[in-house]
Length: 219
Image 1 (cartoon, one colour):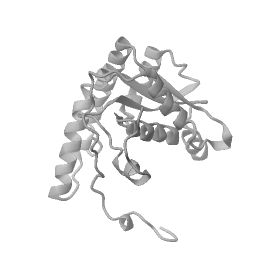
Image 2: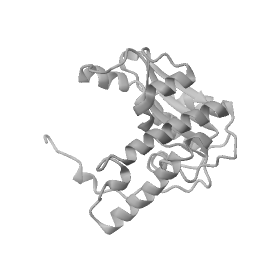
Image 3: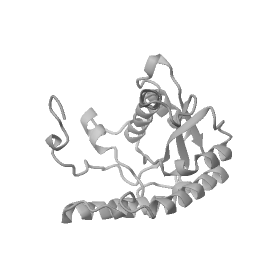
Image 4: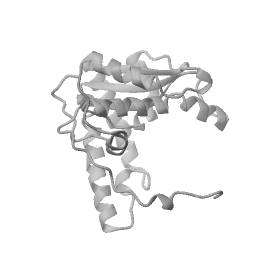
């Protein structure tokens, strides 16, 4: 399919978390998902050991079941003051207005995750990392997180929307059971809806100056 006319910088700065603008009525063909995975496979992998795995969920009953798990986890998340997106004070009127829009969008997805025509679970096939040294955790997640971001960029270039979420990991075992994922051998890292977007005109988000997060030559 033809790609959107975006240069590299435009693609990187306009790949947003899409929630309210997901088109739940339009199917996403298998070959397009496969193209996105093929691109994701070109991402870096530590020791040239590709442990990343993608579980693509298109079965309606399984999508709905995962959506219900996500909704339940989201209700727990909503109760976490200072963690829940809607409880964070950004310190300014414009910043808080943006935070309110993001909150409304996240709340919406909590009730509609299972409505997306496809759900994408990014996983790593390796031993579970509970209580593992930080080097092991970083290295293992470094095999799947760049791949998932590449998948999202490829999806954006094809007019598809995604949203990086991890809230379902509160009940990761339940999602593993729904999909038959071997829990002790495959660790989930990210869950995203996948759908065509209503319009393709996404813009860069407001961010503080780069120097506000750069530490030159030391902390």
